[in-house]
Length: 455
Image (tube, rainbow, N blue to C red):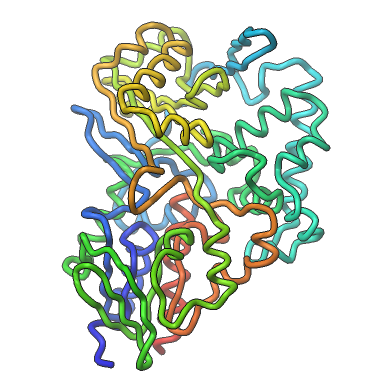
């Protein structure tokens, strides 16, 4: 088979573009095909008047070495996330009552028994997570028993207080994994904690995963990668079929056909499973793609003429279960010239609100912001949202999660090449799984595999 390129990469998100970038530097010829009319995948930056807004991947932090190295290589800089002032914790109580408290540090403003219980639960989760091998989590001690239960069932047995259970559900399941605790395997939750540096790192701003933002928006990274690749990147090119024949790969789509010696499928497992393969994928890989669903996220940003919440000594960071918005951050520009709050709607709440008209979603988000920060928050001078579960070529965010049984039965097929087919994407990463760092790392790993196979 006469090949158009050495390698065809399916997907122009961070994983696919990083893989193409590394292989091009090594001298391989590459074609990248992307279904959307833009690059970036789950990274999306837009403008709200004079405000640069990240509606997808946003933050980088300590330990995320691969995205940090790529930023340095591309000449892209970062600035600290605003992290001054008190955070808010707002929780529902019995008979319609609401608890609203300010937190000046990392200790949640709860009764002492709940604080101690939460610390004990967090320590137990981190201790179990440290036993999980990042390259093969299904071989961890007690892997089968931990994969046979959900995070929720473990919490029911091990968290003694209602508030400790509630905060782990809110923080780890809904805020980080973007699903409900009853949907995710305990083993997957432990792997995710290990891959992200532990409970405290995943949940923290300064010193944690939300420490820094990218100057000019996160889309600077895929835009610069794609700019260097030039016409090797083909947009509006949805792939329908992947055929292995004559010692190579033929990728077919609405815009034509690309032939190559090898292929990297750099889209999430759930979307990779929707392609037509000839010959059919091995059963384990096909079963895997049916068992890594995406979470659900709606991300909304409200712009104000100034960050007025800072006047009251608030950081703009809040965690709440009283409405539709789960948590917020201050995403004002570094100079504070205007104010901006990002609000996240997650999990089953995002599924429900995503089915509502856009005006209803906007009203619900602004009502929750007003409940947190006062009536000024209900009157932004700009508003934009992204419902990631509704985007045709994403269908959910931040990433995939494994329900009970998936990792121990089919996890071995997640990264394993199948003939000339290789797999990338943040879901396949050992470190930074679910983050931009994981996407970059997976692209680099897939590029190494392909270059070695090409000789």
